[in-house]
Image (cartoon, rainbow, N blue to C red; front, top):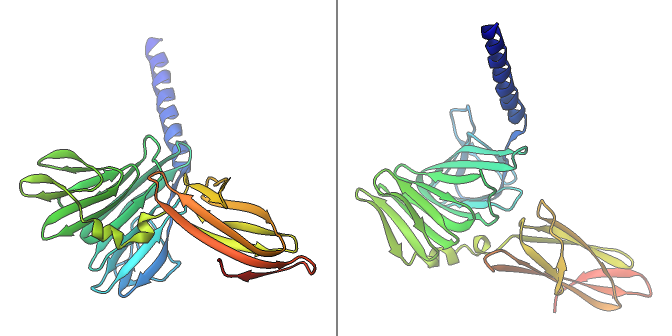
Length: 297
């Protein structure tokens, strides 16, 4: 009798494990990034395809896609949560994995950079069990929320950090943490940490240093509806008062119109203290209930 009982328990355990794995797979979805800008030669090779073709603004990229830029090519990509990355000229990047487990609330992102340079902005804090990694021929760089760059040139990997921290790992030195204002360079002797990354290169990327802030204003007869998007986790103010940022980075606020000039100044602040400011204005004729867009003073 003992063997049949043990067999029943063993089979039950196997079924439970299989059911758990099948259930989890139902909650794993691919992360889709959209092309925000593309200049010069920027091409994509879809997963399962053999050839590259020019990419278009608004096009979606996902796991398995390969991206490459020519000598004059630059492109920016973004996920809905505000995570962004920019490809510099002569860059070849593969999206090896970009998925979300909605059941566990985790994200897994893995890129492979074979050549060129990428600027990355991952400002939101990743949940436990989540990861964001970029692998090169000589190292793996992992982050939890930062503004940084990674480049492959002359057989070396260079990782520069503007905000936050990046962990760089290779087969010789092991894991090394790169702090803001520093860079790591990999070579035949392992990882070398240097004080003073090229901040000038980050200053040339102001839209990556500062948080996203897109603003729309819909004018009515008595009020204006202020809406738009910023990054998940950012603090947002409208004329000095706090505005709630939703889980997808969106916001919506009603503002009563007053006679004459109306102005709405929005400021988004990320966790590093970097800010983006947008201003919208309108002239309102209360006697006619007509509001028209105007310039900020």
